[in-house]
Image 1 (tube, each protein chain N blue to C red):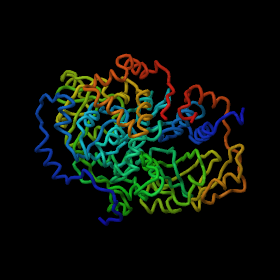
Image 2 (tube, rainbow over the protein chains, first blue to last red; image 1 turned 30 degrees about the vertical axis):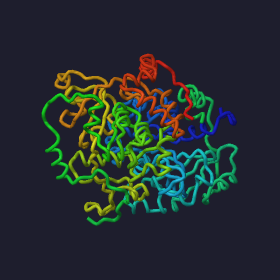
Image 3 (cartoon, rainbow over the protein chains, first blue to last red; image 1 turned 180 degrees about the vertical axis):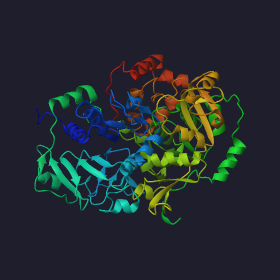
Length: 259
Length: 336
């Protein structure tokens, strides 16, 4: 049922993000593609995916794409509409399996930046800052990161600002800093492929390549060395049903997917 | 306790617990009295140049726009803003030049709509100074510590990050586990404005849908202005006390403002005015456009009703009501 060449990159990112979310698990969702991926997961393989939003929504089944992580679309058919204190406390206490975020810059250990581009005291671009990202990255059992434009400017040896902790300096450094044991980045999805982290070194490691992308593309579009395993498979390819759901039900005006 | 790290961010709005208690004893009346007044009076009485202020709701959802416009109209200056989940509220206050210092959990952005040109321009040119960084949980726990009358609250976020290093938090060795733990200092805004679905003349308020961090903010703010979609009879609160989100004795002013979150959403009542938000995001790409917007919609409108008329009046409000209940489809608008 795969239809290569018939989907755009954002649809590819959304579908791959969606496939990572297991049924009967919980996910803490950020703005944009993570919302789309979570809605798609509920409509396909994970109808019992427990979604949480930082502003207070627990367990929604969304009917329309929210604009904000705090608008009323986020608590459509939810089991709870409570508060940020409630959701953040539940996260800190260990109830969140997956965190799901976008980022502007990332390093080899999955540390991410959404605060500034350039020098902190006189930035070239001032970005919104952490928002809930630092909390999601600190508290979630497994963090999924989407970076739509992998390049030498986004995959960098040194990020301009460490907004949200990945594996910090490598193995053991999260625990040393006082972060919850066993947490950290799990997957990274870009326009070229899907990555995980090497067990021993906690460095970025390729898992699958998207159709059309090559190992050369992966290397050329990264400022740091990515571990390439012997065997690299092809990423999940959107099905016709995925695309129908994305285009007709989830984002009919292309607010996120059309960008 | 051994201090492992001290954040370099400015500690804004912190008071010792005893100082905070004394302020409450001297300034917060327990008397059940009529607090209704105009937005103009509330702002002139409770917002002062140089204050540290906070806006309730979620940046563009359930925001107290009548108070935000009135702060701009009265040209308050040198305000410091709690940039907690701040989007449209923050962009207005920074873009208008009222706020020139902000502690950032989230600011300068409009979520799915992109970055906010006006406040970004102010930050990148140094006219608005970022005095500290934190996260969303970090901010609401500042309010929680203050609400509890404590100097700080421990947490396991912000650790190991530049966000933490540029915050006003301290990392210490936890005497129970022996591990590093983050301490988030209390924050008492000089003034907070919160928009609610309904309240009585004394300030007892009900909020429908998610509360975001307004339980904490309402109880820690030194002065609290409530704007409300409608003023209802006091007896409603006596009949259903389980639904009271904000009790009257933390409230200083009550202002009735139907559609008072416009162009933001009011859950269960009306949806975002996407046309208006898009107009602002487009026009605020230049300083001239920004000034033009404030001339037309704030200085050019002497009441919230007059402002709503400029935004399309009852016809537009009816559309936003239908949109809230999915009776109108999503509409594509250009934010650039």
